[in-house]
Image (cartoon, rainbow, N blue to C red; front, side, top):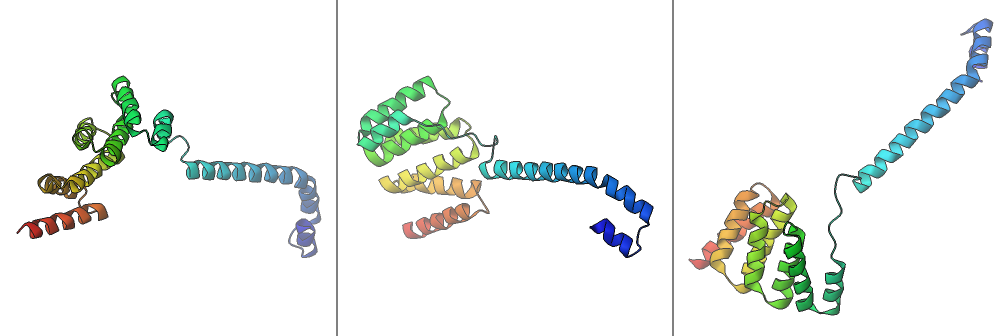
Length: 181
């Protein structure tokens, strides 16, 4: 229809019109393939972006421990975590989960503190390092260790300076110092 319109408006000649009509089928087929390829690549890119395909490994799971925790068998779940850590000493996630379990359910504050420090010493990824620091801050708040809480807040505020979390730690540290005066 476009070629016919161009001929009627005398934009193209009759000979060009015939060439374009003959080429119309291959041009259309090429357009279909081009649209299909672009749409496919775009949708694949979108799905990879949404699900971060290949860039972020799934977090490790501990199904046996999760079942025991759901049943309220916290001590047994902690034993399974300890066994797992003996077998996989580089599993920071297991240490963090065990520390949280000890801190919140079993009142194993000393062991939880040791585990958080181990995670931090073992060069974890930034997310795990932040979880260990937050765990120590929460632990020290819970047990009332203001001296260690101040040290951790100062370290956190320095490490994450300029972020909302770092600023909040600096504010809390300042409040603790003012309250102790």
